[in-house]
Length: 265
Image (cartoon, rainbow, N blue to C red; front, side, top):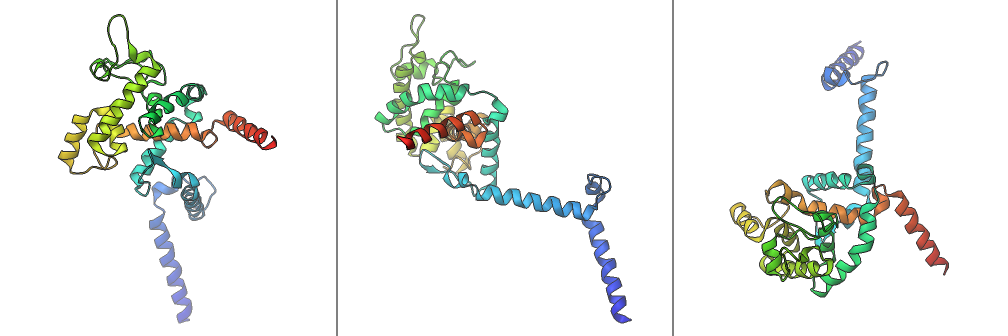
């Protein structure tokens, strides 16, 4: 008799706990005719499986910028990177134009950067800055592939006047960009900070570092554009180097066909 009463009390207690656990806000989302407890349990299982799958994804163990580590153990960093990876995915862009331009221009850019000792990942800056379109300009007067403002362009040997604009010359502007990047590296000694400084300016970045007391780009509180700048570069790099992972199926098939042809030779 006592055992039966104890069992009955246990059942009532469990029912009370479940009622509190699955509040009316949750129940409102449960499909009609579905047990709310079973529905919530199934949802949790699916969420856990998705997280586990993402953690096991080899992509996350191989993310770097300029051979420097990206702190993906920080959930905020990982979430932010995911946001920009989605923005550059085929589902969002619905075009192969970025990859076509990359195939045409990036090898030339990489070769020039390498001659100055600049990490290859910096070749993706013109993709982010101008979409590799030299006609791109900003309200601040920046122009060309690398989006130099006139004063900085002239400082690094480019002609910008009414007759000539060397910012629109891929070779000349890339040499100028390499010199500028190298100067920034002498100043900051960290390639990730160099990328941020390229966007916001060395003086502004130094003030932020001094004011906030950290030299980690990922910990600095920067303006929206600069705070997302490195994430965009990493995302473009990922999408161009791993098109199949981000929905560019046609390129993935083409790469597979090329690999098979090479293997048969």
